[in-house]
Length: 128
DNA sequence: CCTATGACAGACA
DNA sequence: GTGTCTGCCATAG
Image (tube, rainbow, N blue to C red; front, side, top):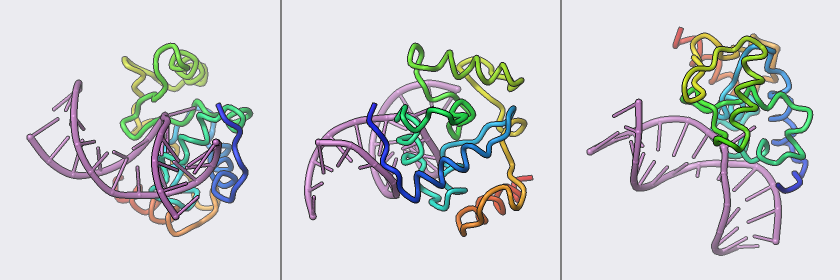
C-alpha cells in the first residue's frame, strides 16, 4: 500500500465518500462523477486501495457498478460485508447489494455541483 | 516524458 | 448468468 498524494481530485473524492450516509452505498463510478470526473472510477479505486487514504472513510459503502463487493475473499471481502450488514444493508450471495434499494441518491446540496455531478443526478432521475 | 498498476465500467459473445 | 476485451483515469516510479 502506498501513501496517497493529496490532489484536488483525491480531496473531492474523499469528501463525496464521507458524505455517503449510513445504510447506503455508492459505486466507484458514482463517486468519480460526483467528484467531477465522470470516468475516473479507477482513480477512486486507487484512492481506496491506498490504506492511508481509506483510514477514517466509510470505505465499505463503496461497491462496484454491478452492485458487488470488489474486494476479494480473504482480502477484505468479509470485513466489508460485515460492516454493511451492521448498518442494515442487505448483502446477498457473492456480496451482492441491490442498488435499486440501497444506492445513495444525493439531493441537491449534498455534494458540490460539477457538470459531471449534475449529469449523474439527472440520469439517475431518468432511471426512476 | 514514459511505463506499470489497480477495490472500475461498459460492451459484447 | 459468465468470461473476455477495451477504454479510461489517477497515481507511483
